[in-house]
Length: 212
Length: 212
DNA sequence: CCGTACTTACCGATCGTTCAGTAAACGATA
DNA sequence: TATCGTTTACTGAACGATCGGTAAGTACGG
Image (tube, rainbow over all chains, first blue to last red; front, side, top):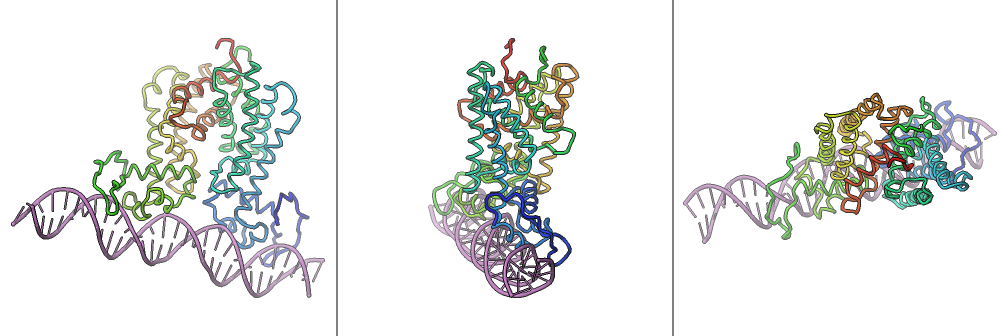
């Protein structure tokens, strides 16, 4: 059960024992679980709470997943997969370094907004277990790829060189990653508009430009 | 025991029962606890782990504090107090809005670096208990004060107006708050240098300026 | 009558916390 | 200086609650 990410089961229709409600599929259980993990924190979320929110018993969850860690694994896989996918897009591999950097940053903002719950979970990991440490390692690889683009852009003269490259990368990621703390999908701010704002603030700063 | 923050007890000297080691004071227990909370997360840190790191028994901790929540409360009080202190400094209350904004942002960076453990704890709260929610409310008040400075600066024309003020404030805070995820005190990067870098990136952006 | 999707009942482990007891140091007294 | 009572700073065992997870049984559609 629940290995790589089935994405969609054949849409079960029948009723369960007690009521006319449709049975849960893995996606539903996962959505509820990730939402709860983000609300209370992974460790502070009990399987009992999850069951309560699903309207079932604790053990019913174990029919769909092998355990609490499995829920975390599936969620992290979704977020990390999408994030890594940005790097393999053509816009991240062709063209001048600063254009690729902007493309990847825009892609990161887009994935953050589209996969908000799972990426939120990913960004709050503490590395307590092997599973968490593996996810953090993959996240760090993504950071390194962006850091490499920053280095290239600095060498090209399209990025300022009076601030340390490492610091620059971290501050920019800090800005982007903080989106998960306040962005509400469906609100007035679209992911595209937010990406524009992030790029504007990151590259041009808060001070008004004569050229802009 | 352990009410507002005694700051320093009269430095006990005697040995305890089992060895020649000096007894712990509240400050030591608090330091170890906050470090562990930041490493594993508050909920994932057990009193047993704390005791192990202190080299004592679980119950010994209860001689110094009333419980796990008390350790959290004391740590949050330290971080919040320092952060709020920045707002009452003269530089935050006199002069043009953009200068006050820069002063507060520099102050926030300084407090983050100086009180790294307690501020880190503060920034990772999920609001599961009344205690946590109260701390989050105080943190939000600080954010609002900065947002007001952003509004003023925009009205003065010293901050760009083509990005939403709320978004601006959040992105800047995202940048600054992310410092707790990677800053190592005692390293080559001093708090002052870091504050300079933050101000540079925030106000002037990553693109090189003709004027700079 | 078989697979699906649960149910109730329960397990051992661990959680934060409490409690009774105590060894060592200190201050006062004689 | 020897003795005594108090305070300080713990120890070790145990508490009830809750944790993640399991075993066995079962209603229902096909």
